[in-house]
Image 1 (cartoon, rainbow, N blue to C red):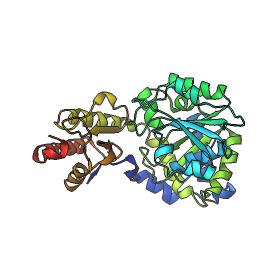
Image 2 (image 1 turned 135 degrees about the horizontal axis):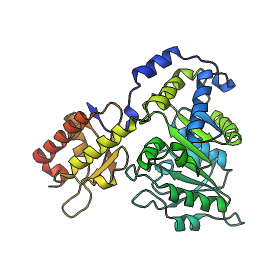
Image 3 (image 1 turned 45 degrees about the horizontal axis):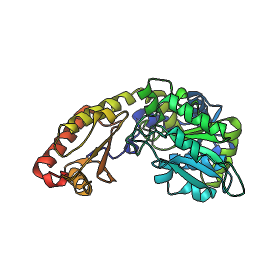
Length: 353
């Protein structure tokens, strides 16, 4: 099975498995797991922040960050396609008793500075004060698009001028850095806190890092505990994270190349609408439409592809997502394209032709 649903399906490398077997461990809640401590130090160094805390998932890292930055009843500004808003079960808003105010994401995934400016509210007897702006890079729901550094700095300046902090959902921040051709620390530089996932393109089996100032991370550790994220001998899994940061970052370029190859192949097929120009990282979104341009139900296509040996994700509104990752080769992309081509020819109604 060629699984393109997400880069979360990656399996740990042999080097990760060996490191996990040999990991030196202790009680991380007491701060005594040496492997976790090394991972946190390495993450903070790579991201250009003072400190980091290891958490079980990206969702918990984002929830932990938002709750640590804000008090109950305060406002968080974020995009209407933000992962925090759409795909994290409302955790940050419900656990933190916070108000989320959305700003439309542009087609390229970015937020419009003028609209962010308007959304920033000062605390009055009538209005909640805005305490946090959440950004996302790469932007998942907008097709894995990459937000430029100048715009990120501009948005952060707006937030800081209004007395709000900036949190960056950098689940795939290393993909963003690769696409921009800069060190990952430059992508994180304008944010007060940033999280990234080890368990996506970097291929570790579990875990994410939340990075920021020493004082912020000290508070975030308590929030992690409140959310049930205090782990004990976590060095066994943290060891794989160290391997991920040391060995798996540079190979992300292969995923980007395979995504481009997939997008170019899809563009040539009738009924499958893809634009390689919009593919900036390891995600390829393509659409299925009726002849009048309205979106098709993608589930029959997704099911047909799965039955033929290729898994992709239905994203609603006629959109299908395919994500390249460790374990997916250029030959796998050719095979997947062959499956999609057969579906378009043998079952044309599934793609609106």
